Length: 331
Image 1 (cartoon, rainbow, N blue to C red):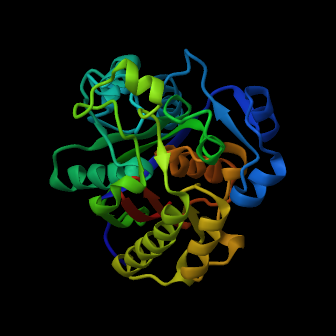
Image 2 (tube, rainbow, N blue to C red):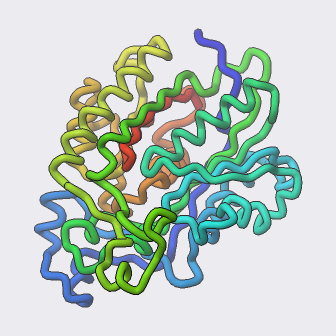
């Protein structure tokens, strides 16, 4: 058995109260239907945050849930790592706002920007910091308010995304502990960046009246090309995670893929030789919540007792950058 240095001891999720169904798009002038969206994506509804339900607000709700389940107080957290593509503001990091909200006065706090793969990147960072001896306890959060950066006039993208947050507490393993993070994998390819990106509004092209009028500060996506790469790269991530953990597909009790759409999920599961009966899907209820999708799902499957102590869970993701990543954990 591969020795582990860190384990997940608590999970939580934070979701906006508003449920926005496919039928609700008619109210904002989008010509689409529940049947059209379901056939192409498997999404029926998603959560949309209000003005006060910010990225930090969702992150704090998820964090408090994870802390309660782990029995960890704010003062015991050494590091807060927040994955987000939708920070509440560009300076300082939203992780610092989260630290202040929680009262985690001892913690260093920083954001990770790796789009949909970001939470798995953050888990890898937390495990490495624990292995180095720098910390003992990390709060790792994926929080996204995608409704703030999508073009609500573009039917091809606005139907895909939702808002939400998921969090975990990662702690140093006890001697002889069987649970833990068994393997992680990360990769990226910046040559493909223009297939899924926000063209303007950053330091290279600061926000102007023209940018807002032209809506070029919002997400753009080449759907067919993204789909092709997502399947290929998530499949690679699954293979690498299994190899590193010295496991086979049959050893996996549950696959939690990034919740982009059902077709990508099904293709990834098929490549990994994992039946859909062992794949968790909640994209129908939440849409694509970017880096929040896997930790939200992880909290759900533990709460529903789909997995429990001793279960082996594989998680894979793919996102803008392009980035892709995976991890296998034993609960």
